[in-house]
Length: 53
Length: 382
Image 1 (cartoon, helix red, strand yellow):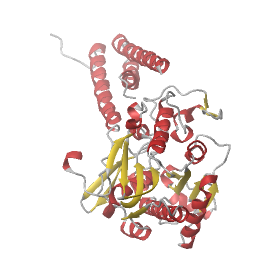
Image 2: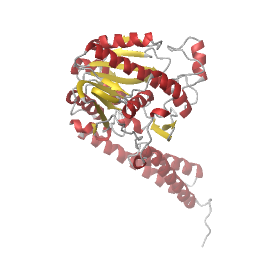
Image 3: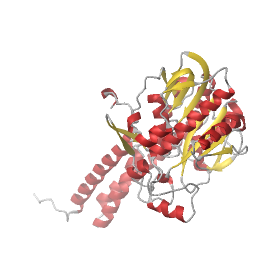
Image 4: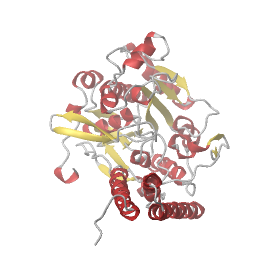
């Protein structure tokens, strides 16, 4: 059970990392298409990082 | 100061991030709302209400109510399980109708209406399932949750590549690790779903259960349908019940629980707990691969033109007309099955019978629908 909890925490942290990366991309990119794509990718990873999904 | 413009990449980023956060919050609320259980009203026959965790197993988010209906005189004890697979909704509604209507005169009935509570908190991705459905009653609308066969991966993750059932050692596809009906009899210190299965086994042990009916549904193109599956220790009761149902023109067959198919209630409860174990299956078109639009109407009314066509092509294991298989008709079948199982059990165990009154009849549920048998929800529970 402790192993599973550890795996879940690592999974959530990775999801948080991806969500944070999309925010960085959003502000670095100049092309609106790349920005929209980053915003779309942000949504499921934010939910996973929050433990909702 | 320069006016804000969409052409400015930083402004665009801020607007898109704000939009993404709003959508995340909105969809996150939808996910979280699914954890709210439907209200179930303890009827006049409920003498005690417990939680699964009261039986000494750490079930966490799988904790779920256990209703006990006890008669004034001692007798046998039947366990009725609903919601092992939460999208198989006739099981939940059968359990709810028993909780809200039945009074036990002799013996006891123990009911677990949402056995896989975790499975009610999510739906299968890409299946387009509604999250709940409503039933009209004389007192207003009652809502019920529509979940998924497996436990929520939020509660048990990750799935193994290969699921090995304990104690049999049978190997199955990894996702079956989250299938409650592949994890019986469970383990006290196992994974989340194994612990829920163990807690249900503890209910059987501690409540002195003698006979179990686990309620399920299957899609119309699945061969094990309109079927009572019985452990060899329950053939006596199962055969009598099926014969009496057929006598009443209710088409149902008896199937022997396969001895080498492990983890299922009808196998493990009989093997490990020594009770008469039975499982009933009704036909639910909302679960099938041939179904059309999956909405509340399909779940409740059970009508689907695709299945009418499939029946004409002889591709189904049940008759399927334009009338479909409405939820009320499926619950009515379960009511008749429960009635005949109790009757048969009492024939074989005359010294410790289970005698009930108020069980909604097959004809009444079919003709009047489910609404008249659902109690009003107290304001505090809404």
